[in-house]
Length: 307
Ligand SMILES: [Zn+2]
Image (cartoon, rainbow, N blue to C red; front, side, top):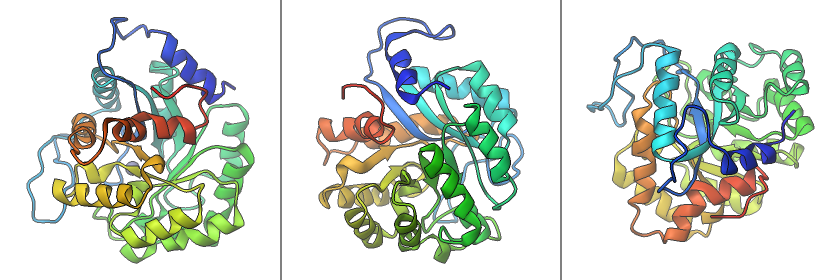
């Protein structure tokens, strides 16, 4: 199995058959929250993306096929110099299709919704042969199952054993599915997990939005905990996103926040998400580089100098 560090070294020094080897003007980005044509709702092609608060009028049209999602995602990755993406789907065949199409561009990972649907025994075999290298997004909150539910324990044990990064949806907002429970997403509910699995490398979707104070408390107390800035770059009003990001940075947590797009079937959201970080006039250039790249290299333990 290739280590993640060897993947990044390849990314930094090599060109890809489907990408021109011209000099990249943009500095590199790591996208810590991507999906392989996955969405928790079965939406028709052309459906608009989610937005909050409803009623609202989002811009965008869902892709029709996995291949369209892949091609448009790769185009955005080239345009914005995204060298690596943490990629998940509940359909592991689709994840492998994307890996075959773009080797070394993604960290392949299973989307866990109902605990047990993707069995820990099956996943163990995938980790053993190196077909998976991450855990999650764990999206059991979409069914009202909180992160400290015992049904998730086998997944944490697997992630700890194979030392893979874990993305978990533990936040106040989510897709409009009947089973979703805001109350099952308070970041404080992660505490039992972090105590029981001290070596787990966890990052939280949307840094727990909007549970700001609870997320700060958890990140202060558990230095291994990171947060992503993903869907909130485009699903909520932009001023609300900036307020949240600024508060996290003012709390001193700017070294543990990582960019993600959560593009699902709307690849155009990748560019919007990056631009949301870049337009933050309260951040220094170094702080933006930390969020867009440097923090992820540390979290993923990639052997690369910050750029
Ligand atoms: Zn997601």
